[in-house]
Image (cartoon, rainbow, N blue to C red; front, side, top):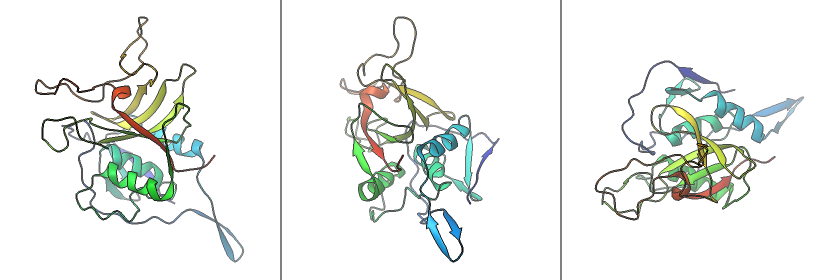
Length: 222
């Protein structure tokens, strides 16, 4: 069984979004229960995925099975699922330039489902576009640059998800009914900032989670 160890070393983070290219893509074997002479595959539950993700809130570096995992949003997401026998980098994706988010997206295309909500469930994945200028051309044309794991959905529809964004793994908010609103008049956060402002950003640049949302995805069952 794989274990994720939270270490105390502080990682230096310079960019929002997922920038680290994958170093390797080993396929993980699913966990099994052994009964006499046969083994039965056991799929992880949504609650188990969320519990693992929640334990990483505040983490500065991540290890999985003794191997340092890339400390970006895709690496953290991958590490959570690796603990439960699922390698989100495991697909037939052949693009050597693909970042971790795109590798996970390719995996879902083969072994999961995408959806747009508005109802989401714990353990769902959430993808974002344009969280930074991935191709460096000064335009808002960078799909699949960030990912997180849904922890819960509040009664007003606000989605709470866990992701590595800037300094550490943390919880973030997104409300797709009010995507352009950061806070309510009472100070309650509806959408967190997910992209840093830059003076050279085009006029149509979005900065909030609801503005940058791309799609949800489901990889595990109930």
